[in-house]
Image (tube, rainbow, N blue to C red; front, top):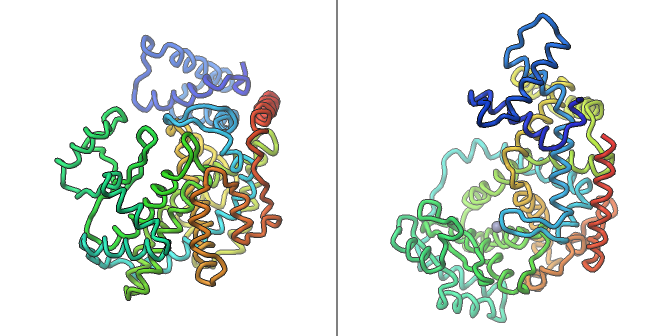
Length: 460
Ligand SMILES: [Zn+2]
């Protein structure tokens, strides 16, 4: 049997052998199928290279060479099916709200990469100056004063302020000190958080969770200036969750957009309050670091996913060619000094075959380790920051009103991310974005997508 003809689960088990080898856990009684597969692979290797006694390392290299691309294709197909087939991920049912991402992966990739480059440049420029972290205190009463002030600025009708005060009174918004285990315990018991697997040790901090349809904003209060931007990030989640229809939720692509916009808005507010540029830049660092880390981790995955949709499979030749092009771009873009450092420290970056295999292997390992698709929850931060940055830019130029943003938050369940891109003045045609398939059509669409995926996979 050729490796390429193996089923998903068999391919997965082959890769799992490595872990078993690593941990010396090949036990015939516990994992008979793996033991058998291991023997088969060993025999196949011996057929191809007789008179050798393959070491585990050699077997693994052989295994990767034979299995790398079939396995990558199988895993990518599995991830894509999560977007088109109704199924559960960590207790949430994915639905048609994800079709925007499914149809626009390829178009979004350069947009997100451009953002990654901006963020990286910013991080590099500030690396030196940011070494000394400036600690700025913000006691509780002052935090409350700022919150009320900004809520009033964001919504002069005072609906936000009323809503905030009522939520505090109802204990839907809860402040908690980091060391206050007593209060944590009482909240866990009151909200029945144990059934969600939440304990004092894993108590969620700075989050907005929904329990029986009621959102709760839980805020770890550190008495530092960051509390203020953290609060507004979570407040946007809390407000839009309170406004949404039951069982509805906004497109995954918009899940972080409003929150990051409010978070960024707090920096403008604090600037007016007289906080220094350095302090505010420092406050933005964690968001940029996070965005950069997520981006570098996910770009190859999204590239593979969009290639799979477009071409039906990811091939080794195609990947080597892509790396050749990337290397050419690197040589043209980077400075001579930087290229020298890169060539000494990471020579594989300039070897098309090695770098193609490396990104393939990294992606495989990531997908196997994250069975529950962390990328699905991390991607909204990438697109969210793109949209938020643009929104703040327009607000500063008086080309977009903060009231408009509030209206969007209230109707987020029915918002097509495509329309948001249009509203913010992105040239959707140049980017190549397309609109989300209308909700009523999605059942048919899903069936069609499923069929297409099936067809393309069968070709392999
Ligand atoms: Zn968030």
